[in-house]
Amino acid sequence: MEIKATDVKALREKTGAGMMECKKALTETNGDAAAAEKLLKEKGLAAVEKRADRATSEGRIFTKIEGNKAIICELTCETDFVAKNADFIKIGNDIAETALAKGYTEVNKELSDMLLDLATKIRENMSLRRLEVINLPENSVASSYVHSDGKTGVITVISTDSADAAANNAVKDFTYDCCLHIAAFTPAFIRREDVDATYIAEQTEIFKKQVESLDKPEKVKEGIVQGKVNKHLAEICFLDQPFVKDDKLSVTKKMEAVAKEVGTKLSLEKVVLYQLCA
Image (cartoon, rainbow, N blue to C red; front, side, top):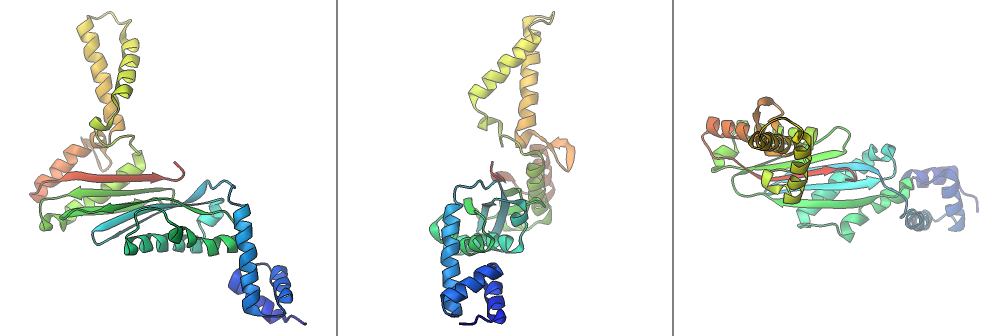
C-alpha cells in the first residue's frame, strides 16, 4: 500500500525515529500508525539493550526539596550534548519529584524505566546511577545548589532550635552559602573526627620526614609536625576551612557568628555532595 508522507512525518514527530525507519515501519504494518509506533519502540528497546555496556561518563545532578524531605540524584548518559538536552533535564526533575512523592529511597525499576522512552528516541545509553533521600528534622533548614554545568550538586541541612530561627533569612542564606562552599572546594571530609586515623598517621609520618633534618630540639620538631597536621586537616575538612564568603573565619566560626546574630543554636545536620561519575 502507498504510505503517505504526512503519515511518515507524524510518526517521526511522535517517535523521533528517522524518516526511512518510520516509512519502513508503516510499510511493515500496512499503514497502521499505532502498530508502527509499537514496532519502532520494540526496535528501540532492543537497541538500548545492545548499548547497555557503552560508557556513560556524562550526565547531570538533580536536587529537590519539598516538605520534610530532600533528594539528590544522578542521571548519566554518553554525551554532553544529551546531558544538555531539555528532555533529559525534564526527566531528571520528574524522577526526583516521583521519588519524593512515592517515598522511594533508592534506585528502582519504576524510576529507571522513566528514562527508557528518551533512550530509545535519542539512541543513547542512559541510567539513573544513584539517589539519596534526606529526612529533614523539625526546625531545620535545607538548601541545595547544582553548578551550571550540572556536574556538581550539593544539599546542606542546618539544624536550629526553633521554627522562627529556621525561617530566618540569615540562616537560610548561610545554609545556601555552605552549598556554594562545598561545590567550590569539594572538601574530602566534613569534620576532623571523620578523618581516618590511618590517614592522619600517614600524613604525620610525611611531615616528620620533612622536619627531621632541621637543627631544632625534638619538642620543637614535634610542634612543627603537629602544626602541619592541623593545617592540613583545616584544608581538607569542611568545618575548618575558611568560609567561602568570609575567609577570615572558618565555617564553624561563621556558623557561630550567624547563630549569635539570630539568637539561636545552629549545627550542621547533613551534607551530601554528588560529583558526576565520582
